[in-house]
Image (cartoon, rainbow, N blue to C red; front, side, top):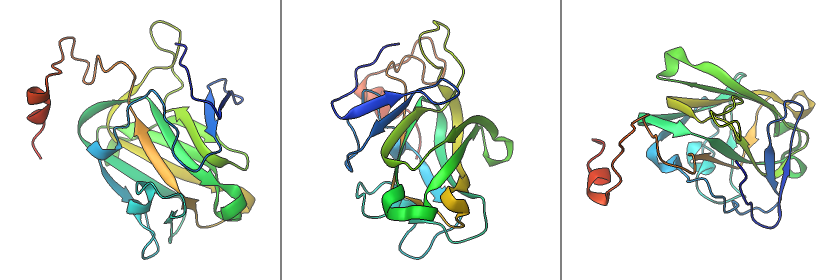
Length: 203
C-alpha cells in the first residue's frame, strides 16, 4: 500500500526490507496512521525519579524516560481490549544521549505479559529524530504492505544500546493503528457511531 508522507520525512529500508520512516524534526510527524497510544496503560521496567513512563507521551522532546535498573529495559503497553497495531513511532537522539541511545529494539506482542512473542527486531544506527516502523514483518493478504499485529499487550525491549551503554533514554513513543479501521477485533461488521464507541469498553 502506497502512503504519502509529509515533507521532511524520509523512507528507507534496512536489511530486512521493511521500511523505516525518519523525521529529523523534534515534533512528532503528522502521519496517516491513527495514534492509539491513549487507549493503553503504560509502564516501564525501571526509571529514575522524574523520568518515568509519562515522559514518553508528554510531547516534549527535551524530556525522556531514563531507565534505572538491570538490562534488558522495556516498555509495556497494555490495552483493555484487543487492538490492531500497525506501527510504532519512537523518538531517539544519539547526538544528545550518546551511549544511552538504543541500538537494537525487540518488539513483542500477546494477550498478556506471560505469553508475549517476538514479532519484530529493529536495528538502528545513531538515530536522531522520530523513526516510524511496522510492528510486524509479515506481508498482508494483498501483498502491498505489512499486516497489523492484533494484541492486548505490546512490549518494546531495549536489547542493546550504542557503545554498549547500560541505561537508556527514549524521548518519545507513539503506537499507531492501521489506516483502515475496518477490523479492530477482526469483526466483519464493526460499529463506528460515536454513541457505540462511547460505551464500547468499560473503564
